[in-house]
Image (tube, rainbow, N blue to C red):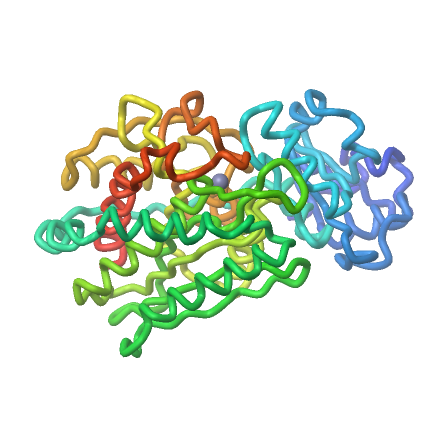
Amino acid sequence: MRISRLLLIPFILAGCAGTAAAGYAPDFDRYVDIELAIEAAASAGGLLPGPGRPERAGQVWVSLERGDVTALDGALFKRAPVAQNKHLAIYEFETEDLDQLSDGMYRTFARAPGFFAHDTLEAALEDLKAPPPLPARAYTLDQAARVKELAALPREENIAEGIRALAAFKNRGYRYATGVDASKWLQREWAKLAENRPYVSVAPFKHAAFPQESVILTVLGAAEPEKVVVLGGHLDSVAGYGDNAAPGADDNASGAAVTQEIARALLAGGYRPAKTIKFIAFAAEEAGLRGSGEIAAAFKKEGVRVEGMLNLDMTNYKGSERDIYFVSDNSSPEQNAFLGRLIETYLPYTWGTLKCGYGCSDHASWTKNGYPASYSFESTFEQHNPFIHKATDTLDKCGGNAAHALKFARLGVAYAVELAK
Ligand SMILES: [Zn+2]
């Protein structure tokens, strides 16, 4: 039921609280009518030509935590927020300034990106709403024989080879030619996995606002194809800002290569899931989770039934005592517990938990859209690879092999078999 508009607390609107021509003052902590909020923002700030449409190329809207804004360089924020709730604020940005924001977030908080970027204000305003509650579901472990057989198939050398190949691109920046080339290369590699398998297909997911494509490999479920399990990690890389050398071997060639190896191992083992599995290499994570944000929102809009999502972002640097760490914020506690049980039941590894904050990686896009998502990480937050987001993020910093990443590939296989059954 709609709350009376007259009773709502005015919010900040381009610095002009209470001047919305439409007379609409959304309370983002309680109820928001997105269409009216956009009209109100347009008439108050004069920012927008029409509902949800970018005014010009390069215009983006960013959501981030208000507490972070105060700690960042104020020069990054040229305008007042368009809208906010108690915790988050929406700013209009220029695409070319996103790299600087991402770099500032990483240097200030050691997290990246730590914000969402959107093509439209309409999409950005969605971030101010509470995520829908997750439906309750049972997680069972009853595929021991199949898991043991298939989880033995991932090979460390395949992952290392994938990391080397991805890290050989000058960078995999989402706006740069080599970032486009890296996506195309991955599409060709993944297409080889689909050869002679009619139930496997590979397709790019094209993004309207930037040239790098996300890559999706689909293994169609044999019994309940409408239900979908998602595994993946981002394919882009960044080092500071600009068209710099950014090998991104750990962040995140390691996650993309692990994703590929999970798919290869399952298919090589002759496995055909009951539910559909989608392996995704996300574009433009470093610029505000743009690839995963668009894909998860599109899935939600189309009513895709995602049973679970596992994010693989930084898997190859063993910085801590335990092997695999699960992010406990902006993720599904039930699915995280399920992943812990998978390790305890099937794998000779140890696990722990950590927190990584708002918008810290692609799992957050799925959580935000009401899907159970988890994020498996290489170390504690404090002990992660210190070479990332620099030209020095190379495989030799991880011992020149993929021994740590292999653990994530084996976990991914167990996750897929027990969830997509
Ligand atoms: Zn990353």
